[in-house]
Image (cartoon, rainbow, N blue to C red; front, top):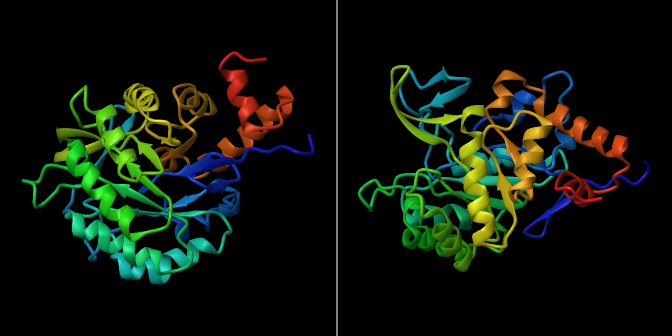
Length: 302
């Protein structure tokens, strides 16, 4: 097949395929040295969670395996927005694929500040706004747990940037809230949504409070993405336990436009390359020329 087109549009950004890394689970500078890794083949590169100031992260232990997945309590270790924009983003931009900057603030003002800084440089194509962080002015309740506060963050970021804004939702909310939160952020400027972030757990592997990720959380991710897809019409980047091509298809079936792979990178550093290969081969074997045709086929179309 000479004209295979796996591209997808996320808020005006063209990705050559729907597969990218999830924030926090993939260091491009290290991964590009892995034999067989080609960052130019990714749909996009997503940065690690970036904060206004440098953070050294939480004390050990801060990561452990759990029931086929992973618990982490990293604490957003990163060099801060200045260093990320000065050195990390230019490195990622070398590969010719969209760069999505994940920003994590502890006040509405911090989110707005980082959006403003990112908007002033070349190399960042979109912002992923992580509203799972604790709101230090709101009793440490995460921004993403309240539709009104989530909307405030989104509006503040939207006011500071012309770039596409992707809001990353937390699964740690009441059953009836995820759709309301999705609508609130879209109404105030989100161009796309990504979910799910990690699931909060307590007292596992010596970690008092951490985030659970990997294959065990996939059913939760599928359920919440399905709810969000029914609530809003913007593109959705789905994540949460993806490691196989069937997982990718399962996320497409509940409404994901594209997918991000996180924890699986720790087990198999070439999982992203393998998924892209498998998706391409699936198209060739089934005579499918585009991603839309793939989605039609896996949903029962002809």
